[in-house]
Image (cartoon, rainbow, N blue to C red; front, side, top):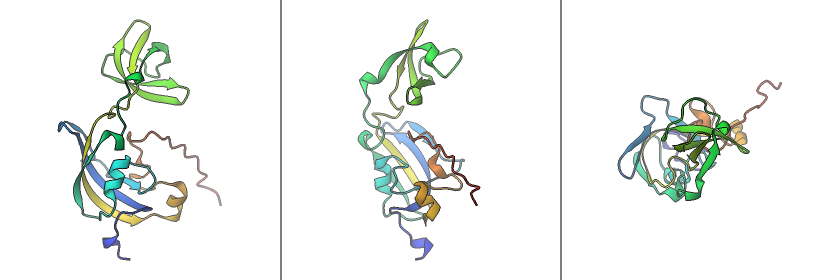
Length: 182
């Protein structure tokens, strides 16, 4: 099968550039000037709504995908605002409302937005910063290829820009694979 005509489907590895804004056209982030994102399709490595719209696209395709919150980072949970003792924060230094901090929880560190700062406690919003937002992605597909056997075993892309190690993911990659077996 000619590499040029490969379409995005389960177990293809896709490399793309993106620019992300919200439904009010406010710029959020972009891969412009950075490495493109590489992910393995069909393994939940990017937001579900975007993954769904990637299907059938080819290298060289450019398109805009508008993803509602329920297919991205979910609705905002009003109960996710919690008062936490400042000593539980992994982040040190002066706290100001509007800044992102890391909080030590039983599930490991989580990122949260500082809403209000007291003497001993801080009110944190534990919602994902993009929760409740419709995300508008401008996508430019750079490459589509078949996943390698090793990538299939690990469930994500390897190589430059692989793993999708950016803040779009809530899963932690604890990769202690023994790369020197043999």
